Amino acid sequence: MQKIPLSLAKPGMVLAKEVRKEDDDVSPPICGKGIALTESLLSRLEKMGIQAVAVEGHPVKMEGDESLDELLKALDKRFSKVMDDPLMIKLKDIYREHIIQSMEGQDAGPEN
Image 1 (cartoon, rainbow, N blue to C red):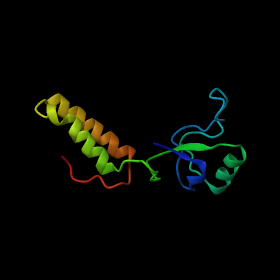
Image 2 (tube, rainbow, N blue to C red):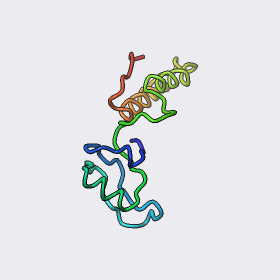
Image 3 (cartoon, rainbow, N blue to C red):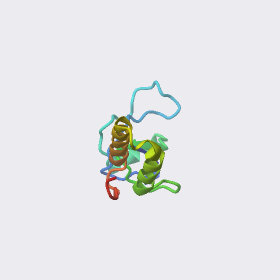
Image 4 (spheres, helix red, strand yellow):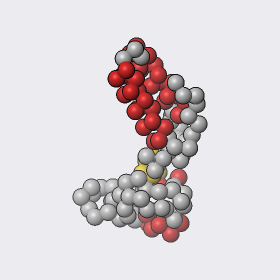
């Protein structure tokens, strides 16, 4: 999931979270999770003053974002001192899969 400015959202991207008015978290949702964005929906959200949306995957490279390869290298470094512990290896594998899924579409590099 990635939160992006509405100006960077494109038709076909899928909402990862409900869209609500940004100043009112208890208001009814404007649109639901799992909805594919369309030109008309993006236009309506813009007219309603929505500034950002959360979309599935990681479709937009933003300044300061780490690449998938960088995230996986950082994970390897964090677990480097416990690689003789089978439970810690399993935990690392779970985190690795989560990172890969959250960054879907980017090159994962070699499996460690």
